[in-house]
Length: 350
Image (cartoon, rainbow, N blue to C red):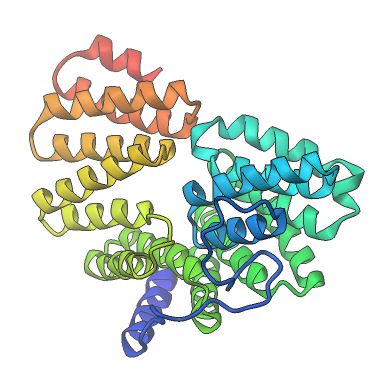
């Protein structure tokens, strides 16, 4: 714990001396569309143009905007008999819509594709499937996600896809935290953040600022955590095509609670919940409901806390977000036990 604290504090001090490139331009010429000029080709019939725009938006963490471009390109590629790119765009479409479906089923589908000779003999397509699976598996099985990202990183190195090498390193840093290796995690995440700053990878910067902020929050350095979350939000808001940084909103609320500002925290969570519902971000919707329930309980509003957690648990069960279901049920069991309803507490705990 001391090691990770020192590493995070050192990174925080460095970033305070350096201006994050909020207006930096994404590097050009990448296979996945990083750095392409913004386009508005909803009416285009050129599947390559549609794919480039979809990949640009995906790179900015904006699945809801990317999905329609992937879908249209997928249809055009399929109609022309281009099975390789039809699968590529299908994977992009499904990953962009991941929070509207079962993570378990999506992971199984991606694993089936990875086993196909067409994919294994095509390094770029293989990499793309592993990336999609890595982002999916972290929600259900971090050990599988680690295998995904290690293999993806090796392929990206062979292809010269240096920005994906960096992103893989950052995701492996997150997994390091989950494995209980905070020192390695902090080094990987810190290095990944600095690399994304150097290359102008806005989406990567947002992702790693969120994760590092979470690391500060975990070691009870709430003021520093808040600054990372606010940097992530500001950076995302500076680009109209960036996806909404829900993890930063959630983390900001948690930091505000820890700093004794529950009313501000509740407003942040409610605003984020409205955005999550508008974009059908089901995983974030469930998590935000859990956080609202915990916040209500912490501020003495047990009835409101139980209502939010019951809604979160039912919602997570319905969409098969089992980890969030377990979190919600655990919090509910504690609340029911505290109110003396031991029978319901036992029911929620099992």
